[in-house]
Image (cartoon, rainbow, N blue to C red):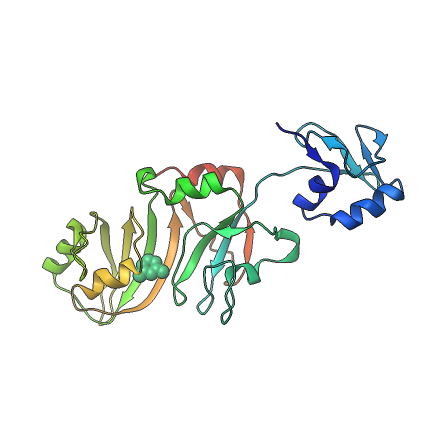
Length: 239
Ligand code: URA
C-alpha cells in the first residue's frame, strides 16, 4: 500500500481537517506506532500504521458502502441547484466528501440506492458486462394482457428503437392498478417507465428493492442510510 501524509490520513476519514491535525500535532495528541507525531507531513502506511488520536486507536477504512432508502423528491446526484440530493440525506458521521451514488433512480422512484467512494466497485455494479441485477416493484395505471407481459419478458422495443434485454416479470398484485416485480440486468434511462409506456401504460409507483443479491433492509426507514455489512458488499456482485 502506498504511504500517505498524516494530515491526509485524518482528512480522508473525515475525522479531522488538515488544520485540526496541525493543532493536534502541536498539542502532541497524535501518536503513530507509539511515537508522538511531530509533523503533519509525515508519511504513514495507512494499512499498517497504528495511529491514535487522544489515546484512541483510529481505524483506517479506505472505502465506505452505504445502503440508502431513497424517498420521492430527492435526486441521485452529488449536487443539484434545485432539489435535495441523496448526499444531503447522509448523516455527518457517515459522510465522506468523495461519496457518490452508484447508479441512479429517478426523482420520483424510491428505494435502494448504494452510495460509495469506491469507483471500481461502482463500475462493477453498473457495467452491463457484470450482469448485476436490479429488482423493482412497479404499480401501473391499468391491466396489460398476457401477450404484452410476454413481450416485456422477451425484450420489448422502446419508442427510440432500443431493444431491451429479456427480463423477469411477475405479477404480484392483480387488481385495477396491478403491481409487478421486475428484474432487469441493464439500466437505461427511465427504462421501466419506457418499457411499460411501450404497452400503453404509465407507472404510478416505482421502488427498487434489490441490487444484485442484496435486499433493501426492511427496517431502514425512508430517507435513512446505514453502512453495508461485508457480507452484503460481497452479495451485491452475486447475480
Ligand atoms: N426505471 C425507471 O424508469 N426509473 C428508475 O428510477 C429506475 C428504473
